[in-house]
Amino acid sequence: MRATVKPEPNHFEWIDLWRGLAAMGILFYHVRVHLWVGWNEIQAHPENFSAFDRLTAWLSVPLPFLGSGVMLFFVVSGFCIHYPKVGATKFGARTYAIRRALRIVPPYLAAVAFSLAVEWAGQRWLNLRGPFLSSSETIWKTIFFVQNYPPSWGQLGSNPSLWSLPVEVELYIIYPLLFWLGTRMGGKVTLLMVAMVSATAFYLAGTSAPWLVGNFTLYWIIWCAGAALAQGLRSGRLPAWRNWLWAPLLAAAGAALAARMNRGSDILSQYFWAVAFFILLWRCLSWPPPSALLPKRVASGLLWLGQISYSLYLIHFPFFLLAGAAWTAWQGGKPANLLVAFAAVLLVIPVAGLFYQVIEKPSHALARQWGRSEKS
Image (tube, rainbow, N blue to C red; front, side):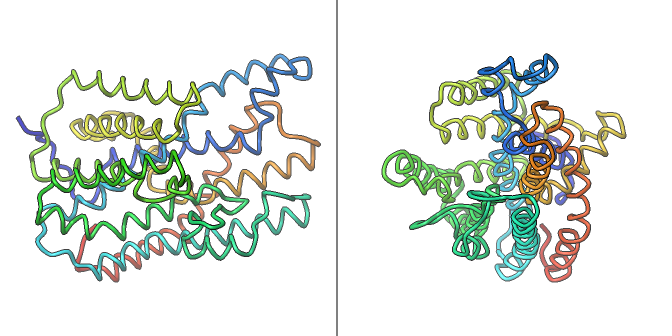
């Protein structure tokens, strides 16, 4: 049996929904850095905190696991990039390059500028110091997407989330080779080669080359898993969902949680999460769209979050840094109540919506205008 769901080539509601949820998970994961004293501090000195602060601290239990949303972004990215190319005989490299560059680079550079503005304002008015300020070398490397590479790799002090964007760009650059290999050698041989490259990178990242954590080779197999899902869905060769597949999904999620809780390899945990997200996306793409299953307002809100998810990802960390520095200047320390951090998550959403309207949406319009010969 084959999957019968045939969504529109350029719009997948489930993709948008999971993009939004992944972005929100990452926001809740990161907001604790600058806007909460932390679980360990509260547990070590409970006498210094109110009963309500200690109670709300329990809301933080799932938060350390939500950073895995980046792996979902990689799976979704591979799916979305490859889906329009399934069955194509010509690649259209020039149009592809223009569209990818216009979608990624202008918002990214605007986010770099926003981050540096936060550093300047924080240093001038909020006594921001130390690791939250970026060196000129880091700034230039970030502008040119090479901050993940030695000899002195590292992210902007105000926006370490930008580590994944060079990885994404590298995956975009290598995709034409993947397309060529797939059309000439077949999908199975191509995936085998990709798996070998990723396995080698995984080994090296755990030994003498930790900088490979920020290299595309480590995440190539995850991205290509999304591409394989797109290949199967659009070609009609995606096997029908079977309920027994819930078992490996739950097993992968459980293994990811265990690896994280036992302070095991973060990379291994990321791979387990990727397996779980792959199976989950497979399940969702065989269902009717969220707008047909959820209340209208809930569905529209989640889909809007998916629409602005890139903007959310780009600017949330410097926003939290600035908010945390302002709170510390006002109160003399980080918030003890986790609900303050949650309020900051809500506040950054309209800021990201404005960033989307002013920066990201116009860059999408340019991408469509200059790449009319190729849909993506």
